[in-house]
Length: 322
Image (cartoon, rainbow, N blue to C red; front, side):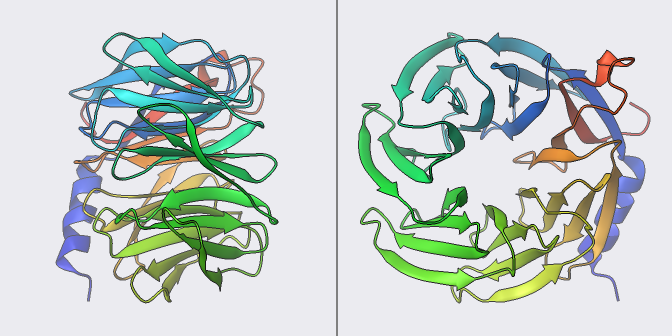
């Protein structure tokens, strides 16, 4: 028997399953993220820039393009409680903090290697950045100075604090989830989560679960307290490379090189919806208050005849009649 939530969301998506694309960059988009108030979405691209859009009724209106990095912007994230600040991680061995009110870079922090992962602590005080050499640097968000640095002996993929800010999680190339105490950074536990490379990790907004995605094409859901796997989502055929929980924690979007984004009901694992894509999806992000999903895909094949697709940010969940 389908849950009431399932029926409500099915009904909602039947009337609101339109996707729209908005030109953002001149090359592929690696990362999209919403500000905490849901007013803006930012994107980072291979073209070395970040773009910020404002969400108006049923569309994204480009507000600004942020230049300064000299290499690809691989990941970005917003301050957890200040909707005006976001940070970008780049292959140019820097991270940059930007303020949408002044449209300026308010800090450039030099790091040791080519940065690929970044996250902001839930209390807003620390930014963690991971590089290609498996070094994670913890930067004070106020002074912009490095507080700690850890070199890991394994391939570090994605990094994240738990919602309580007292543990730090890393997914690794051996299929494990490594958990450190924070701020001590002492190893608490290593969980064998997947038989192959564990790529991405996301915590749900309610703090009950986190999800991991792997090259085995599985997405697994974990109980934060018990650190046990509650269920697996197995509708993808390709490595799960990006995940996002909806604002109420009840839906999980996951995407890969499959030409669709899977939207699952967290509590049952049932498929709620499937967003069709023309190409692999690099990044997905649910709006912090509404069932709207921002995402970005690889450039279409045959990109030489259709430049329209290059570097777009897409939005799913718009009214069919919009």
